[in-house]
Length: 262
Ligand SMILES: [Zn+2]
Image (cartoon, rainbow, N blue to C red; front, side, top):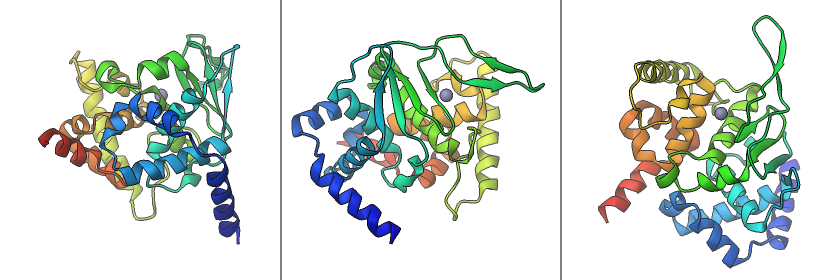
């Protein structure tokens, strides 16, 4: 019954909130990593974006003006992660807050001895467990093109959101029933330790060294690489690529290699 209501609501949203074609085209063009998707997939992605924008509010902060293009660009990057997953993976939180620049986090955290702190350094993005995703628009815009930026802020924060489905981010999101958490953790820990050692040795890594910060950051940064530069992840950490292909139910490297052969 609930499922029937959900499907009916979804059909109603899709019928009433279409994205105008020129706006959709402009958003796609600003995200070159989406070039590997087929028309059928992009059309499913478009439906997901419409539903995402009907369910989440994109809230401007500090007097910022959020344009329709910004809304679609943010939603597109959120939805590419769940293209083949259950859209309910983003349930339990309501909004994306968009700042005109870097911002100082409102989030408090407790250290090992129980003292509560707040971070004071400015952030480009943040995901809060059970709360909003917060983004600095100039950083979203600057990282939309992987070729120039080598990072993708929006994918990073939405990957944290998937990780946070089971509470605080720890690099091990809730996995589908057929995926044994033990093998995920074993492979992720081994790759994380390997990467951390490379960074500590001063190696100039092609993957953002920020991934060495913690297992949660490792998952978020490697998710950026998986979507925006899949062959890099495949060549550097094939086992993780394989796990992510299983988790996200996508195989982006196979398509990138096909594109390169054309
Ligand atoms: Zn992060």
